[in-house]
Every structure is written in structure tokens, then in C-alpha cells.
Length: 149
Image 1 (cartoon, rainbow, N blue to C red):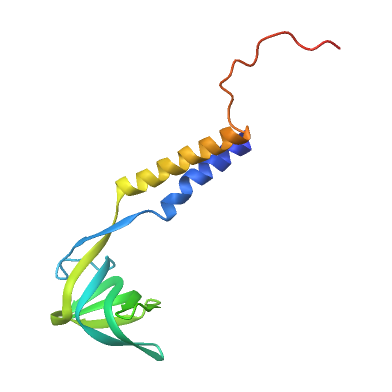
Image 2: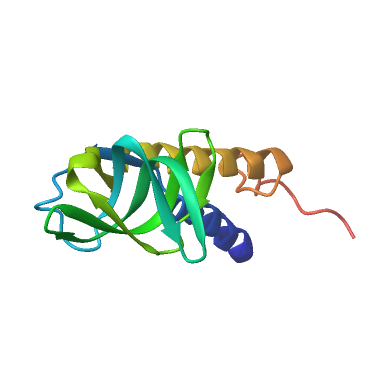
């Protein structure tokens, strides 16, 4: 029973690692370094990442490094092209002219969405164990006479 309890606990905690996030409007001038953000661009841009250049990018996700003069400097995690292709940023630094930033949004944890996911996993786990007969029994067991030998 102790092993089952550990499995239930592990299954209940797993969704926290893949919690639900949402984006809220942010200001580059006050976003602290390391803040996860998404920048939507006015015009499609090209960025050089290591030895490749990615083209037609209209959205960049990453962490704020700094606002350097009139450029927003991000440590890119994902670059999305207008064509639908996405590219891993792998932490490479990208510089975006502030005039080309149509909108900046901060990535935040959505507690209520994550709570719904956790509650669903717990309920699903409980029902699954109950259906398989591995859960606690709430029936009237425990009474009666022992079998004859």
C-alpha cells in the first residue's frame, strides 16, 4: 500500500513540472534580467544563431538580458517564423531594435489552470486505482467470521 501511495503522489506532482502558463503585457524598461518573455515583432526579421541564419521571424521567446540603448537583448529559447517553422534558440543572444517590438509579454504561471490539471490527474489516478481494485476499500469489509480450517 505504501508503494501505491508513493506512485499516487508522484503522479499528482508530475503536472507541476509541466504547469500551465499564460502571458501578460510587459514593459522592457522595467522587466528584470532573466524574466521569461515573448516579443512580437512589427516586421519579419532575420537572426543569426551560431552558424545558421533563421529568416522571417515574427516572434521571439526568451529571457531578458538587458535593454541596450534602443535594442532589446534576449537570450532566445524559441524563434517562430511567419511560415509556421520554429527554431530552438538554445540560449543564443539576439538583439531586437526596440522600434521593431510590437508587443512584449511576460510568461507567468497560471495557478488556476495548473490547479485544474493537478486536480484532474489526482481524480483520474483515484478513479483508475479504484477501477483496478488497487485503491482503498470503503466497503463493509473486515467483519464476519474467519474461514474454517
